[in-house]
Every structure is written in C-alpha cells, then in structure tokens.
Length: 283
Image 1 (cartoon, rainbow, N blue to C red):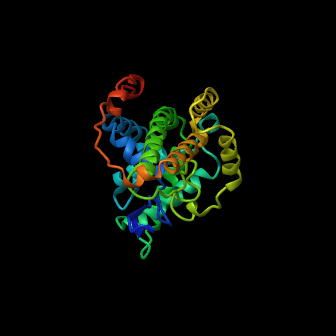
Image 2 (image 1 turned 180 degrees about the vertical axis):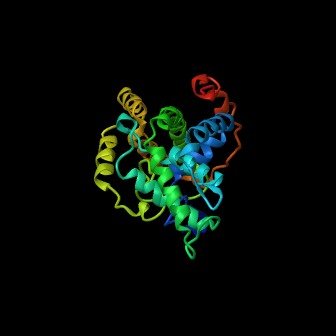
Image 3 (image 1 turned 90 degrees about the vertical axis):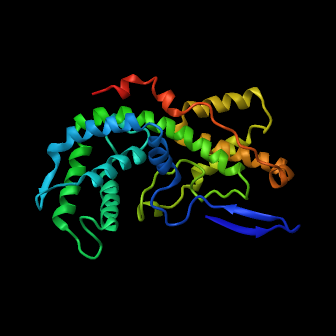
C-alpha cells in the first residue's frame, strides 16, 4: 500500500507500507514460501511428491473424497515451510505449534469456501483435516524428509528477507517498518498475529548495535560476521534496518532527489540450489 504526502518544499513523497493490519501472512512468511519456493520449483515439487506419498495413509475419506483435498494439503506444506520455528529442539515443534497451524488451516479452508465455510461448517471434513495435521506433525517419517528441506529453504528465505528489507528502505518513497517487524516475524492469521510485541528484546539488540560506529571498522565487521553466523535471532535484519536508515539520514538529498537505474541480477537461486543434490535428489 502507498500513501502520498508533500514535503515543506512541495516535493511529492510516498510512504511505502509493506504491512497492513491485520495481516494473515507477514513478510518473512511470504518470503520463505511464495518468494523462495518460486525460485526452486523442481526441488519444491520433488518434496511435495515425497510428502504426499508418506502421508497418504493418514488421510480420511469424507463424502467419497480424501480429506484434506490436494489444495488444502498443499497449503499445509507451504505453511509449515514458512512458519516452522527456528531452533526447534530434537526436530519436534513447540507444544502450541499444532494448534497454531490447525487454527490457521481452519480459517483458510473456511475462507476458501470449497469444502467448508464460515456460514456452513463441514465439521467431518474440518475434523479430518485437524487429525491429519496432528498425525503429520508427529510423524518421524515426515519430519526426517521435511526438516532438511525446511532448514535450507529458511536459510535462503532469510537472505531474501534481508534483500527485501534493503530494497524496501532504499526504493523511492519514505520507508515504513511495521512494529514488531524489526526482527523476523512468522506469526500467522489472527489471533496468532495479535500477540504483544517484545520491545525489550528489540531495545537490547538495538543498544548493542549503537555501541558500534556507522563507518567501516574491524569491530563492526566482526559484529556483522557474528550476526550472519546466527541469523535466526533476527538481529542481522535489525542491523540492516539501522544501517540503511542511518545512510538515508546522512544522504537525505540523494534519496529524495537522486535518480534510480535498473540493475540486472546475474545469478538465480536455482543455480545455487543445484549444488545441493542431497535435497533435490533425495527420495
């Protein structure tokens, strides 16, 4: 969404809004799923075939058809790739994760109005999908094939997330960061996305960054390497936001009046993924 305004000198400004509340899929979720997976269609399709084969027996037959149907099953896998929590111990999701995914899927199915809806609940179908989700998330066979793919996709998703953050803060217009999105954000549809923002952890991370000067230095480069070594905590994203906003502040005239020229990317993620045969060829 874009809002327009005029500066005191009459220059037209744009406020770039990348989030609008309430949102069902925050930026990191979209990047890890739609954006990143679209760059690796062969590997993604390969994994889908494996997971559908593993989980076929977990489905129920409702009204002569499988539950979940192919579209809802696809949405489930896409959601798991994008929303899987970082640092999950022993490969098992947190206790509340099954409920979060189940609630998200229920809302998605009802709003799609294919098998159920808010006006007419198809309780047998909804119950069967809920049981399927629980069975899948407690399946060692599924997790053994899912987690390696998800972790690799999450890595590229974080890189794409940093790229989008940088672009958002440098394209024409006034940059906007939705509260709570200073770090990675993987909440799902409301009420999952209505949790309070932990400002304390963000303040501590910001205070640490303030100890380093804006200019290039050995200490700053050491910090960057540390942040890149553990990108899952999101502090590398906060670093990009702070450094870029500082750059804009020091070069206000450039970002307000400067010209923008196109630049063609030279390497796609697909070529990078081709170096990971252990995932793309795994059966």
